[in-house]
Length: 251
Image (tube, rainbow, N blue to C red; front, side, top):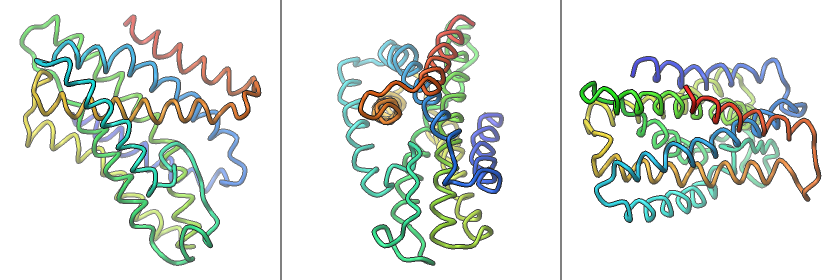
């Protein structure tokens, strides 16, 4: 649990610092990172999250409703986040707020999204060793997916905050709030809810996040190939994300 908290926190922190190295206007790497993380997220959702939650749920049919809820919840959240969670960088301010103002709705929607992602990272119990080993494997695969997703999201958020606040220190302090979202979700699920992988709350949270991931990953994959033009670099990044997820499944 401590490892997961540190990984997700510093994934956002490091991605925010990357703005100093890679100007947002010249962020080809961001599109490739998005394609890679989108393919990875989509794959682990299909081969890990959905099978695991369906297998452990006392009412598998209800899972579908939670997945739908998560999918459309993400649609609503993006009305406020402006697509930052899948790499959209809106640095113009005449449509999205004045310079010097803090985009609280944007940050709040991202915090909800980040909290939900962290909430499904429940450390499996040690009894039933074979099943626990499978859950442990899924835990780290999902952790990697969330961390990969947070890198372009953190970079995009830092770029937006910097363009609005025009002060790196202030923008970075607000970014730290976003960095705490997933760790807080982990703490709530593991300590306060004390949810088992077959618990009703965990089932609902996992269904919501699976829907979230399906929305975000498909949006990323469609957006990285506008008008269906083939881009070799993005195609390679997408295939690498797919192969990493499939290869990890063999471990």
